[in-house]
Image 1 (spheres, rainbow, N blue to C red):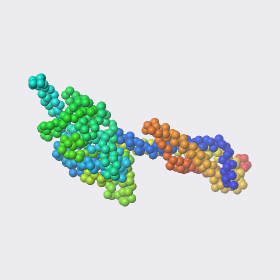
Image 2: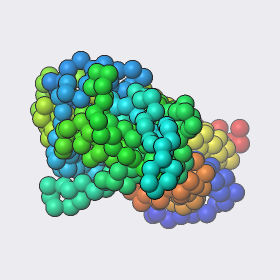
Image 3: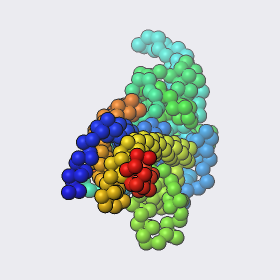
Image 4: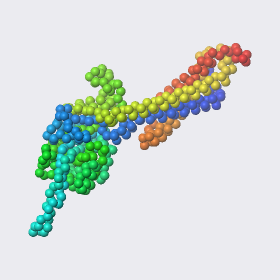
Length: 451
């Protein structure tokens, strides 16, 4: 009997039902789109932020005090501690190994730069010739690193990494050096300041600087490109790590490691000392991709290291991600509130229009629970229909937003369908509570008298 009453009531006044369903469709479509983008925004924005550069710096724990000028370490090559290149594959064995997008070791070697130039002419049996002598040496920093290096991982796989992953914003005129070759990329400022200039295809000569004297045999390097970084590397010479290791006499070692990792914004838990956490809190902290938990795991696989967050990058990421997520949640809440108000307006109009029907039902013995149940059943049916249609439109809207904001459409998430249907039901019921309360207060006697 109840089902028949609901069915008969549902087919009446289709115009009001359509308006209620339309309000739910719009609200649920916006909620679906914003929730889909909110679930995607963390990973997508984090990957976009990786163009800012690495967000973690790994250094030896027992290192001496660095002498840095413009971000470049000018300590002599025989001072300071070093890290082993062979251990770097272990970074892809930590719990959050898939969040390690790339890592790049750096070895700074103070050196002198000189290019042989024609000095004086002499005559030999073969005819006129020119004796080459080096020009005035120029103190420079040779930075050994990787561009696209194949790293063996202890599980038997291999991982390609280098500055193409950790520093994608660096601009190159020409091409990068080949790892292991006697090639170099020169910073744009140094290339312009050097007498006669330095361009791709030119050969330069460097060797280690020790005090004011240099070694007698300079190493020739073929310049393959000119790099612009906007940082200290613009005044340096970038070479393959193996070349810098050979110059410094530290084969298989490096001094700094930059790591690019996907992380989530910091919260109160991420800022706490792991030693003060309860077992439950520690598990939640360890299993969350906080920059602090990833740093802790890196220190575990690379003993004797200190891992520091590069705050200029990490803090910027955290603030922007938090603000974008907050904005999306506010938009979702606003859409749900707007849908609830629209449902409340149409429900109030429906109750007033059906005042006579409600009075007759009460006069023949219908309880407030029965009358309210009929109206709530109608609203739930509209909520299911409006929520389902709104989810479909929301998926399309999310793809449009993803394509316009991130350059690729956001994939649909079916896990949101029951969530959207549940939200539609809550909005429909919440919007009907005030009109139903008013209907419960109707007195059938005045209604039947036509008052």
